Image (tube, rainbow, N blue to C red):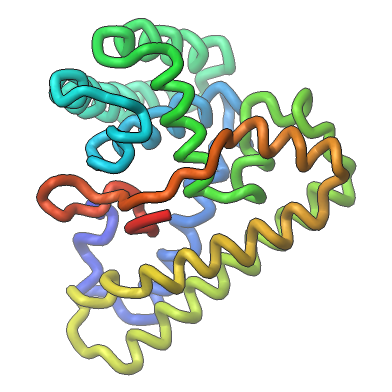
Length: 239
């Protein structure tokens, strides 16, 4: 939650605006230079963060030794990603793909290929159909969206983020402690995700819905917090 460190000194209207901007940054990477390759790297780092959850470890059959090896790698990947992005404002897809190849090779120190793939599946479930289908590196091949479908998915994503911002604004009206504004709402977040997924899947054709199910794999059910109770996903505490 480092992005919110300045929240207590910001006006409430600016905080709402910041929430909306940050939500689109998470899924807007595919539109930057580097396209889907950039998003693939960023989303994989986020996915690996989830491995600190005991329930995720159980799903992956991840040993304590593997989890201990993985977290320093994730910290290193985050730092390297930020440095590379800062130093390479106009990096192309090949440059981002090389960064991902390096991550993938290093991940073998702690994860099997199947475990890394499963972490991405769980992450996709957390992010939701609209966000992932719009940003995924292989979206064109997997989904072949029409212009109309893409527009509808964008509208669904905007609507979901607006609900989130409105709920946050409501919490601001009843809670005078800025440090508590980002707490709570866990069940509401799960409801927003369910509603968004239902709407997004209704936009897709049967073959596209099948492609989505293959992409996310079996449904994950469990908590997304580490041993200290820290939330591992920006919005969700559990699926």
